[in-house]
Image (cartoon, rainbow, N blue to C red):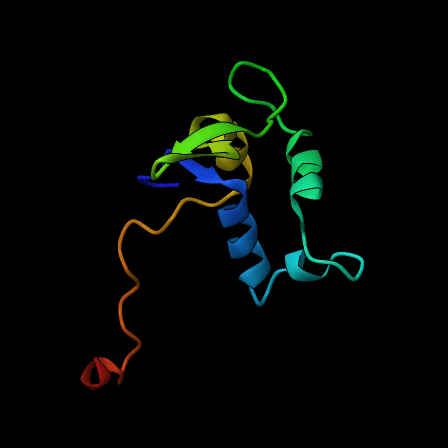
Length: 98
């Protein structure tokens, strides 16, 4: 989560449900929703040893329910691989395609 300090729940759900190679769009015949996401994230703890919960966040002049990156940092560090430090080099023979 680089450069983003908060995201509305709706944005998280849109992104997760749009992933073709992930199960979020079809969990028991339904896409992941805010209640299920909240229940899943509540199993993890913040740095203050509190369950992760959605909070009111200010975005573009409105207040929405969402999550702060700081609350997700511990779970993110444990279970998500870090982003690559630099782009992968091109495959041999594909340099002319760039």
